[in-house]
Image (tube, rainbow over all chains, first blue to last red; front, side, top):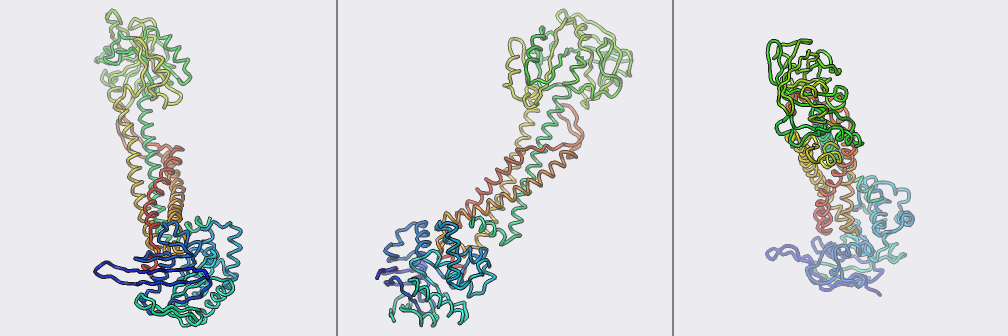
Length: 228
Length: 406
């Protein structure tokens, strides 16, 4: 199976020599296409840092991140932006939609950056909204949507660019249990029926229950990696 | 289109701040339009006062005549000069003159003065001698007529129709010649010197008095477009300046006023720079505040693939919208204000230009360039001011931005 992500001795330290915080220490993992993986661990264990590094949002102190075989450390800022746009989808804990754009426009935004034609964008937006069960709510701004609905828009936005990988940073943390389960079901469906690769960072037992693989992080190090 | 929509909506996240920024720029533009209109109006009023009172917009005379008004230095063959003037399509009117110093005496007193021999009809189109008339009648061409300033009339203690004797030295021989006149009109130019020292008689009488057949000392011209008069390279000046004859713009024989006008033009530039600088600071401040409030959002935008170029484009679009809206509002405000002052005038009290008192108000000038050039400067400077915040926003590191706001 093809590797979507490969990290080699990945390290990320914060602070200077005197007060150095080792957020990640020599993390080497491989994630293959179509996985539904959860990175779990206590607060401060380095889950979000790992996702940021894998997503090219941050630069490692040492080590390499290979995304679909490409070392992201070798990319310029603009090239990395393009790479994220075309290959990675993000779902954040706090939804993080653009508040002045409607749900449809938030989904359309990435396709606009990709240069997708207007008609195709409109078609995809409708398709994505239907996929996450938000038909008829496309014109609403984020503040007029519930937390669960906003997170579904975020998932649709992440899906819209047809990425190789979706990184979800505690996507259910701000949702009630039922909404969280509904969202996870959508993502699981996307994974199983559309072959989308998901990597979560989470404390949520519901995600852990649904994940095919669990990577345990503690003090910035992988302490366990188990597949179900 | 989505970027434009995004930029437009971003401006309404903090409507009050956007409105304040727009007001700052709009008021700066309006102030600049009014200032420029006022300066142009003031300059035009000064130019009009200088050129239309007596001196004209251009003068042709003997090369050395202006040095000490030596009456022997004449244009002896004015017909060829006048033919050249007539042939120039830019010239609207001309008037030949005799200018000679002499003694002017009444039954009670006498004084020295400058006597102008003028062509009554031609003079109407180049000077305001007739407009300055406060008593009596304007010249009609008869020999006995003389006009003098109010100050001179008071000095000589004369009233209308009183006898005046003018004594001058004849050209060439220097022999004195006297002529009797009847005071036909009293003038008030508002200049003490002109009112006390200037007298006006008919051109033919003056030529006979100084014993010249058709010679003149000066030919005053007025152009269809007053701006042409200031062009020292104008064909009229070039073609008539040769040999003993010299053609000059009014700027040449009023160098101090020329400097004043140049300084006046700088006023607009200086004020424009100050206003635009303040407005630019307002734009930078506003955009930076807006960016700081949205650091998290820029982090998200970059995370999902927005390039630094896209971020710059977005911030610049926001600045462009602010600039365009400000220019529309500022243009309207400036137009309405400047138009009102162009009709009702700006009261400025009394001051003197070239020895001539001006009492009244400046009528501002509303010019197309004020609504094309100034807004264009505003847009360019606003975009320039926005460049720094835009670059700052484009360099936001997504991971830092995401952590910082969470």
